[in-house]
Length: 563
Image (cartoon, rainbow, N blue to C red; front, side):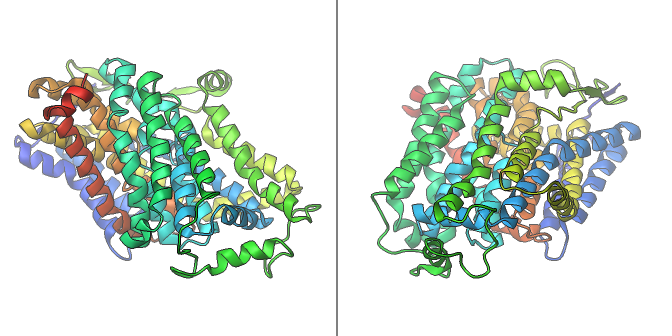
């Protein structure tokens, strides 16, 4: 048994600085030119292990087990999702379906800004709500590349878009986890987050298009952006406040996609924004025209028997329709419980499970940390994606040998990224079980009246460290409620702000950046992606913090929101 130590250097300042060292090493190296992501992750992990063992006194075997546990979680389920999304994309791309999908989206709109809005914000939110854990960035990044976006744009913009839906991702998993560690009412937490994030569901679409096209380019399409934002934020508020956390993103994304698609049937921007640059139709529109008659030169052959444009277009949507249906069904609690009962051996990590104790003031009473690896291979989202890929392969008449060959090729391509993801999660789990995360959290808790702002940033930091809003809520949810009582603000408000602030950390967590670089096949450029999104993450997290401050102290906002 080992109790976490939150002031190993007997100085809160120096203890906080040493606990921050692994994060500084990781993000600092990622931000440098020429440092590959797996080197940054491994060096960050080495720093975390050194701090845990040499400074905090964590037993060496226990620290190594924590790192191994994190690496296993990085490969499954995170790596399993990425691998199978890219397998599905490879199958569709090899048979020309991705090219046909691109043409289909250009029929909705030839404007790159609106394509980005539809794919990254609306469509990505559906996958966040149904699956989460890297799925939306993997899917939308691959689709944006297919639409002709540059790799840096496809990666960075997918990360920016995947923010507002995150707190209700994977059928409300972050909020459910938050309720579990705080003991607060689930519906009250859902409602509070639903009074924080809808404002940012309005802001993020405008921010996304501004980041891509500039302020003037955003103003040219503001009516469509407003439709997408309002049609997402209103259902997000209503469902979270009057139903619960489970279907918030599913309902909001479907309403947003439907509303935007309907609006684009009757409205077009005055100036088209094509692929070659602003003000031109670009190669995307040229492809759309070509698809009405004969395949464009160089386009991959269509699946056997699909010689008509209508048949090709219908088949182009098949992989993504099958993927959406299966991921949604796989995420239903009843289905997940059934599949878990059939295939989910739970492996307690000997020497780590319930051997590490979190102690006051991080928790009200000393409590052991569980360390159980769930090998839920059948209920995992990645398995649903693999099944969607196999269904697609059968539908487009791929031979078994072709499927095997494509899968092996995908494994080879994603191998370095899977290693990086495993190292990233190993670092995060080492920080969690050693208590390095709690040391950083306690530093935020000493901010007094400014705690609503900095407590929100604590959620941001938690996601940046762990790559998961769920994990951040588990790590810091109890600390938020304890500190809220001391400061004299609403416990529900601060617990919810941990999740709401955390969503803006999603775009800079190393795991998501590696998923984005892998999905766009832009290997080795993680540092450029981090620099692209970092300022957006900081700015949006600060805005969430300001909003929470207003909710905590400023009447009438506090009277209307905090109940």
